[in-house]
Image (cartoon, rainbow, N blue to C red; front, side, top):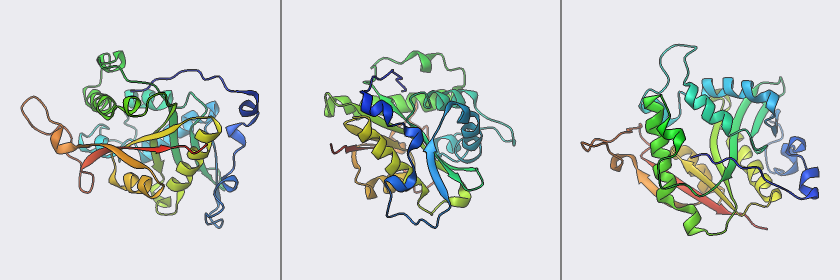
Length: 250
């Protein structure tokens, strides 16, 4: 699903480093009593971000959880999922929320999206983890069926790939702040369209509140194996994967 390409930007954008963006720059309506800020994920932050995702995303994400992608055990992980996550940090578009004591309390991984291939990509064919391969196949299926580049031709698409918040900080507007900051960055970098695939109904509701519109929905009950059994059966309220988009106002 991931298509990473180098992007050329003009001098003004080059001087506007995402590393210097602060929460207060774009979110005046947020509760400033919250003692955290948002900053770019830099190369030296990647291992810390992975540690965060191992604790708060890899196990809890509905698709991962329902097929028990991560084995039991405090130090267990899925290395293919880690590689997937690391590849989403290569474009200087990902962000993290950091508390006053320096702890990461939220992460959003973003990247550019190109048109998908109708054929199964090599990264799926070569995936050696059978459980994660099921997820990659599902994401590619959604990518093709949602047909974003067909519905919105000649649009430069900014893709929000992973959103995760520390369980102790949920309900405090951190995911919203990360999404809003990502929306500002997409505008600065001259993207035309935001896209996010929501496997979680909770994230989907947040996207709707921020003005995203659903353009494709796949109910988990309708995505079945060769004998007709659903491949993914997340717990309620996670009943479908929904693709949302939002046009970026210039």
